[in-house]
Length: 350
Ligand code: ADP
Ligand code: NA
Image (cartoon, rainbow, N blue to C red; front, side):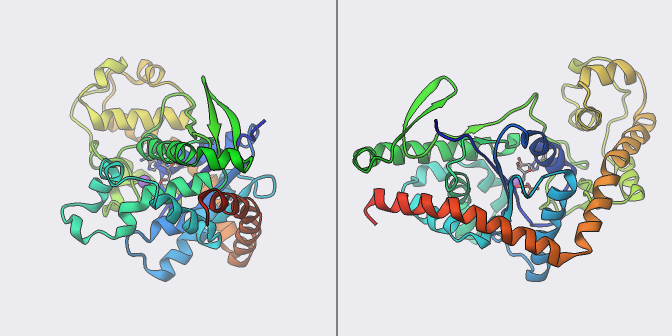
């Protein structure tokens, strides 16, 4: 039986926000009971765009603190930062030689993140999906709980794994390194699993509070566009009060949210925070104005986030303590990743 394992990560490129929490970290906490998990602070991904070094050091600890504050157990599972495990970068190189340019050219996130002047983007930003494949496959992880925004990258990870399994099928067999994996309906033969996205319930995609067509993101220059996990009650209330909406009242059914991205987003945020369905929320609040609904959303956001940010501050008061947890996690991660690298290289003739 091939071990089922989860890998996931967040970039330390700034403040963790509500999208990261609802779309990622909160779901990880639940998965800990069902799978061995590896949760990474992906600092090598962060530097695909320039990061101030001191801010990066701080953000790395802050993301780790958020994992711990949200309830990730670093003893039962593995919490570390990517750059402490050199096997990620090494496997990424091997995969850069597997991935096809055409595959990378299809990635929509590069187009979004590189902006207008593609020539000025770093080469790292372009091959970011290869590094993500290496992150996952260094542990031969079978499942990745990703947000909607990362689905395309996960498909690329599967394409890389499948091409590797195919191109080196004879060597994998000759070395006795092949495994048979039951991936959903499919039986897969090879060295790397075809990692699956783990979707529990409707995929949560939290959009910017200023523009319902863009996802809430750390890299958005407008701080009003996102709720950070470290925001205090006043900041949260202010950002929700200033959130872009439309002049109409809330509809009483989900269908009424069509074409109203900002309204849909606020209802979605409230529903996710409350653990309720949108339909249920609209049954209660349909017909109300946003001036009435916004304070309700703000109160709930504060109630959910305040205990987490208090816990984060407690961890951050002891940076050496966080570093010790990350070092210990990196050692345990390396024990797995170094074996994968050794086997991958021997399969490839290196
Ligand atoms: P960002 O885009 O803010 O830099 P990351 O790329 O570090 O965030 O993403 C970390 C995790 O958080 C991923 O699993 C991603 O799917 C999830 N995530 C990021 N932004 C959102 C969002 N707006 N809504 C839902 N999930 C999100
Ligand atoms: Na992202």
